[in-house]
Length: 256
Ligand code: NAP
Image (cartoon, rainbow, N blue to C red; front, side, top):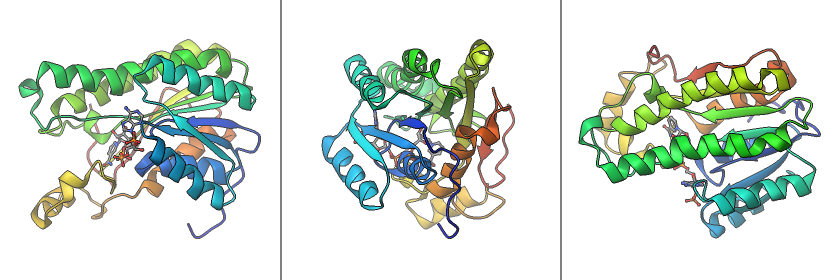
């Protein structure tokens, strides 16, 4: 990053799930650069240790633990760490899976269940379980990481695309419910971002060319393209913004 990040999140405590790599890691880094204390997590201890070490060496205030978002006991530990750290102001629900490349009605039942378990049900449960802590915050924030595929389904990411559309509904409904608590709920829908998750879409020159033909800005996004918008949503600059979904997709079509 060239310019020094703003310092909008001093005194805030944030949880970012699936934050040891890719978009989640960039979000954790950016929230911490803006002054938040950030709790990072993912399924594998080795990844957690590496991410904590990398960010700590940058002078950032982070701690980490294992949290597979579908496991109730892991989520319980996650919120326990937040409570012991002083509370929770910002929940970024970022974890998602896509176990099978298939058109929507070719998806196996087991893949459908896994996709909805991680991408939708765990997001719902994280938000629900975060509430006791978020309600004690002066400016609680829930941010779901959705996808451009939620607007414009990708053929071979059929069920995944539907799960990401479901997050838009969850965002709207939860925003209305939590407005009286001054907790905002928003989503960010990334376009095609260069991470391990999107490798399959860009692994050959022809695949990359096909993907780029749908991106008016004519480049793949980077995790940093996403993290600044999440920091904005987490900050007081977005105090009057709730129930929305910010598309960051280089101009790709995004209409339901
Ligand atoms: P990524 O680079 O593959 O990173 C995945 C991260 O998730 C890793 O830290 C991984 O660590 C963790 N993880 C995976 N399954 C998990 C689980 N069940 N519980 C907790 N952590 C888990 O992925 P990404 O591209 O950054 O994607 C992040 C989010 O952005 C996802 O919601 C994805 O749908 C969305 N998105 C991505 C793109 C894109 O083009 N990349 C586009 C639109 C939306 P461990 O292996 O240690 O668990």
